[in-house]
Length: 280
Image (cartoon, rainbow, N blue to C red; front, side, top):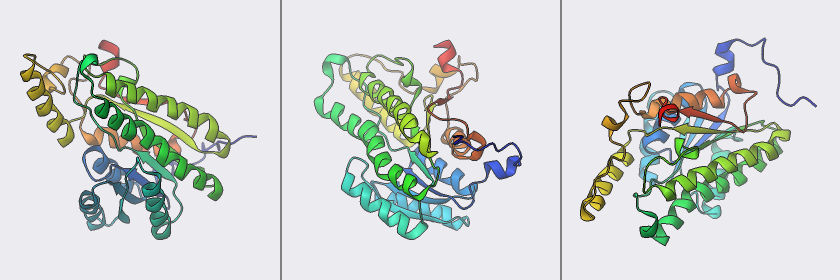
């Protein structure tokens, strides 16, 4: 049985359009999530901005609706099945069945040598980055299957999925490699239902969260008499494309992955890395 349709006879404008579709963006109230929600809305999707911080979800939603988009804020703790189920039911009640899920919510752990990793930091990072992606997917995917939506799940991985980026990033790297495993597993299990599952692997992205982590890392390193280069834009000027990413670099690729232009893609990773995996 052929599951993925042949869309050769459709125009590019039609293939890239998300009109009539419902998208959920976790961690949608800040950073990369705001850019993703904005681009999906621009492509025509109705967007649920899901975030553990209600105020940021409402702020992003207000920006989208002011621009004419259909959007709603929803409070969601991705680590909690109860919170996730309640949020998803609220989304379905207001916007309809879900076609696109972007598991963007994540944490950047403060770098630490392997023998200084705190159990609570490890557990929290894995809970949000790994269990969170799986938790939301296993709530939404069965609904996609039941509604025959032939949906798309997009997970936020990292270039750390394929290499060890910097000393002290063991926890973060472990979490993102686990996300990649979830993507591959879900792609195999959900493919027969017509649901595609993809990873996006950004290089370092300039966000408020990165700026905060950069400062915390510097403070921690200074206490130990070390220096850090975490997320320092100057450290990336040698890359083939010469800079780190901004949120919209990632959002544009997510919009493509969610569209029918990518209808024969599943289980793979789209790197948005400025060439970092070639030269580092």
